[in-house]
Length: 93
Image (cartoon, rainbow, N blue to C red):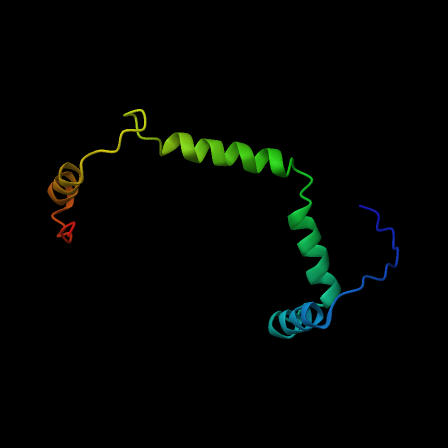
């Protein structure tokens, strides 16, 4: 990968720059390295928002309650959890 160097001035308020300097001191990385990593994270070239949205859909699908939106009764849920793991849960009150 060829590196094309371009210099850019970015204006930051004092608080944001202090946060960058603090992170730099803690991690031993340069301020520029931290900024580049933040840009890479925010503007992902691997599909970015589409990939995150798909992952969120998979997570929601995996945790969906098959009862079409009707929440199970608390007493039944509690009894099932207690029976499955011998766990003591607090009462609803």
